[in-house]
Image (cartoon, rainbow over all chains, first blue to last red; front, side, top):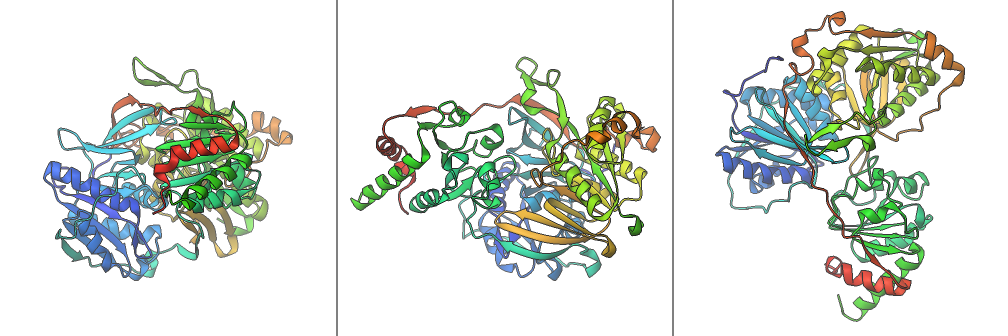
Length: 338
Length: 271
């Protein structure tokens, strides 16, 4: 057996790594705080939020409001932008000093980047991309994961190694209501870092123009059958306050940025409403919308597999239906209907 | 490591069952892979393509490394036919049932045994495991930097640097790391080349594929496979499938639009 760095008998507390970019918390971090609060209440443990970065003191307030009993602030110039090594070094230092029982991180690109590195350094188990978390009768963390196109669900345990680590996808847990009255112990952590601890440099960083399709409640998605006419999709999206997404084909054709790509090679979304236009609906695409509450599909091919993944199906030409839908919405709002 | 000789890239390659051919036995609630054919994990083909592009640009060689049963050798030979120079297969029952800690530990040992590497490239994640945790794990065992989820890489061998473009939610970034470095490549990052039929006979017959056991690599079996894995699978269940309504709406485009509006009205109220 790989020897644990510390054992279950020494370990205590439920920790959440709060990911932030430019001083704004990632939505998944807030969702994780809500879930951690729920698990901690059930097991009579404390929730600790760890925030790393530079000039991030203002994040102690939301961390407290969303459920933390203790907030650890690790601030250093070398933590301003996310790179693996200094974050892994700081997290290792804090964890080995305090020995948490559980450590949760968001399954974002950077969350997974850090978790994978940290789990090996700490010689512990990591359950990646959980779709649910619970505690078993012995108080062990059960990470639920899916496999093979979500055909199976497995429950994963880490019985002897600590911390029990898990990453969770954005949108799995609801965003908790903030409680402004909550109090927490805020503690600044002394950081030891030098330039040698940061071998990787961020030399360019660009923020896309578009919105965040992973957090969107409404999506208008276009594929091959849109024939390059994303303007009509954008018009509908603007009207109903939606973001625009695309299939791989539409991105490969250069009709939209890669940032909008949905599916296995792109983003997995969980909107309340997805209007899918001219997408044939291969499995590689539908994994990106299978968590949508309601799916509307418009496609001229009645045999298109997208209709198996849709709640409401319209067999017609996108270029005919969408202008009519836009017109109908405008007409209704013009009549004071909205 | 001699930059005059170009770049030595090691590509970690996984063979996975075709996911659409894996079924679930409803009685035993286990995966039935027996009817599923195998294939090279899709992002690993993008990874091999990225490695071959670096070789074309800077010279050097590309080694393939995989872990699995002896039948994986033929997939490594496909990689050799695409343009890789040599291949290594870690094949031992002791490696079986490994989680990401034990898997990354074993692969790091294989990489050390190949030796003399500048760049280690891995696919972003496997289609069957889908954790994405092995590349950072390998980087940690080897104590080298990592760049994960790269859509484009550029090596600067004289400066001993690699640059990677990472797509992040809400944008992208370009990072620069010193060699040697582990880079994981996104699925769809490039267009993998076809097999080179001029290489076919060599790849299938003559090309060197070295097979290693755990003992051959001097590995402690207690750190490998299931014994070396901190996590255990406590339960397996068939996932409830999200059934869609599949309700068809018909008529003229205007009539369809009107019915759609009725359907979506509650979601689209202007806020």
